[in-house]
Length: 474
Image (cartoon, rainbow, N blue to C red; front, side, top):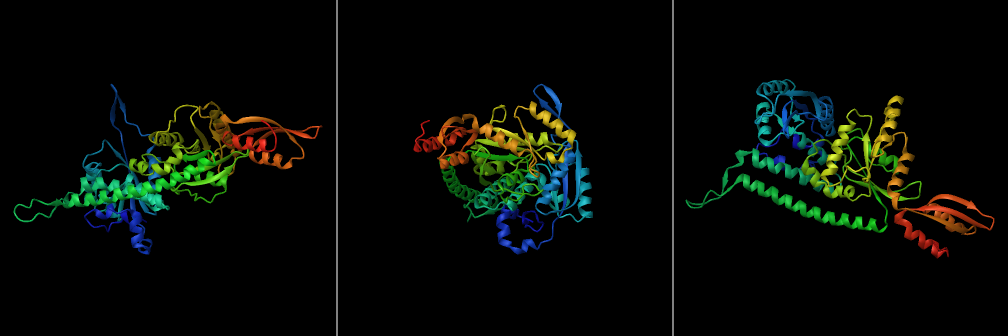
């Protein structure tokens, strides 16, 4: 468990500004021996009116309170917090000072005391003033949704780039809280004699230290980005098309990646089980070779600074030739989850609207559906603009259809060649079977073989070169 959410931090708030990854390294095995933090999860839900143009419409949550509560518990469990209780808290409107009304604050204070809660997770944005007031009122640590997701990312990052990205997002988040919340840091330093002036406020010094570290991390990330760009340039020389897998967290992306490629990527029934991107070369049944990339899962209200920090990693998605949007089609909120993923893709500058966009929806987990529901979805898929493919990453159902759909999307510029090859040139015939999609083959009486092959656009130059080397003009 990350020590950022423990209740033994000093009251300056600076311990909160230390990234979780750094503190784990510093404390080593001491952190692993710490007891699980007793946690209360709160999901604020309110109804209010909002102005939309000239009309007033009720504020509506895309996700139901029950599913928000379940997801919030999943987020807490992802870093091994001991969730003692979890509540949906109805509110008429958010209070500027405490988010919750005074009566609800008192009620929750009693719950915290009765259950000896050491941490309260609020599944909502809590500004610095609200956080400090709630911590005083409840005498316990308070973490909002953004802070919790940052902790999870800090616990999951493994590569140097991932650790740096998480640390940058964490410091950016804490910098705003340091400036706006901890007014007790506004004590003065320096200033000698009667004319020396007030000196530098402690909060300014702390803020400058944070900014210096942020600048240093950005510099390190630029160097890492250069290395990643070199790798990307190397892949372009191959060149194989990039197919990136995206989706809502826990939609089955890594399971699908493992099923297709045979890779050993961690796949668990847990949010953000994998963070760092994994890439594998894959040969499709058509002989087309692609590079498949598994990326971090998205989630509703994904912190903006995390999207920005992980932009280098997500460049694999931005530059992909095809994006597979994996959806948990068995989840009751699959449409809302798809909306959240499209929003993040839009934030990355990816156009998700046109039907001919380079996004292919993959409706996963059909093995969890009954026969009637599966039949209905198959009928719905035909009418969808994105022409989704129904699969099960667990059973392998629909994978042939998925490969064909990937081929069709990537093969718009493919070429079909009609060839006549001597039957004795077995090496060339075998090579064509290995490197092209053989659509037809027929042995002829004159001792030649007639072949019709489809050649991937990225391999056409190599295939033509091989044919000319064998004396066959195309």
